[in-house]
Length: 404
Ligand code: G
Ligand code: MN
Image (cartoon, rainbow, N blue to C red):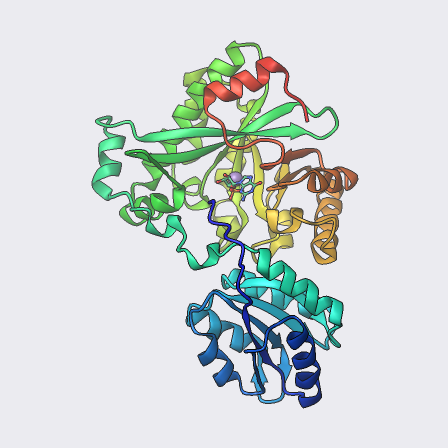
C-alpha cells in the first residue's frame, strides 16, 4: 500500500476542450504552474493517444463537446490503461457532474476533481496540487484480480470433511442508540495457503457445480455452532447469515435451516437471513411459501444491499422483511453527497413506515456514523465501527463491552 510517491517533476498536461477561448485561458493558467509541455486540443482521439498509459499526465476533460461524448472519452482512456490524473469539467448542473465522476471512478480512472465551468484559476491550482500529492496506485494492478479461484474438487473435499478451509468471520453490527454490539453478520472466506479468498472466488464455482446448496448449509451449521458459544458466554445477541434466494427457494432448504437451529439449540428468533436484493428474481409467489416457512418459525428476513436491485419497492411489498440494509453506496459520504443523502433518507423513511429495522452498511467514517444516526438508523455495520473479526475477537469485543 505504501507506494505513495510524491511527484517532484513537473507533470505534463492535456486539455481537451472544444472552446478555443477556454483552451487559451487554460494555457495561461498551466504555463503559470510550470506545465510548459502541455497539449491543448479539441480532438478526443489525439488526447487519448497522447495520454497513453503514462502516469504523469494530468488531463482536463470537458464532458460536453459537440460530436464528442466525454463519457466515451473516459471509457477510451480506461481501455488504454490511462493512469494519470483526470479533472472533469462541465457546464451542466452538479448532478450530471456527480454521475460522470462516479462513472470515472468505477472505470478505475484517477479523478482529481470535478468542476463546473468556467474553471477558476483556484480550481486549476487545487487540482494540480492534489494530483502532485496523489498516489500512483492506480497504475498497479489490484491484487484481488489475481486471486486464484477455488475448484469444484476443493469444495467437494470441504463438504466431505477432508479439509477445513472454509472460515467464518463475524462483522459486528452496532446499536446506534447505545453504541453497543447488537449482533453480527457472518462472512465466509476460503483459506488458501496464507490467503483468505472472498466469496467471489468460490461462490460462483459452487453455484455452477450445484454445490451451493450444500455449501450454504455447511456455512449455516458452522455459524450456528459458533453462535452457540456466544450465547453460552452470556451474550444474547443475534446473527445474520447470507443466503442466496436460489438456495432458499429449493425444496427442503427452509426446513433444513430450521432443523439446524434445533440441532444446535439456537432459538430461530436469534437468526436473521440476509437476501441480496439484486438476486431476487422471477415470480416471488413461486417461493414466498419457503420464505414464510422460515418466518413462521421465528427466523427474520433482511433485504441486503438495498437500493442496488431492480423493482426495489415491489420486493418490499411482496416479502415481509424484518430488516433493511441500506447499501454502502448510499451510506458512504452521504453527509456530503446530496444524491446519496436523498436516497438514503427515503429508504429509511419507507423502511420505518413498514415497521422494519434499518441497518446502515459500509460506513467508513465518523461522518457516516453521524449521518446515519441523524436519519434514525437502528444499527450500523461498517469499517468505521468494526471490521470482520474472528469468533475469538468478536467474543473479546463483547467481553470488553466495546461501544462506539
Ligand atoms: O453484500 P454484503 O452486504 O453481504 O457484503 C458484506 C461485505 O461488505 C463483506 O465482505 C464486508 O467485508 C464488506 N464490508 C463491510 N463493511 C464495509 C466497509 O465499511 N467498507 C467496505 N469497503 N466493505 C465493507
Ligand atoms: Mn450481507
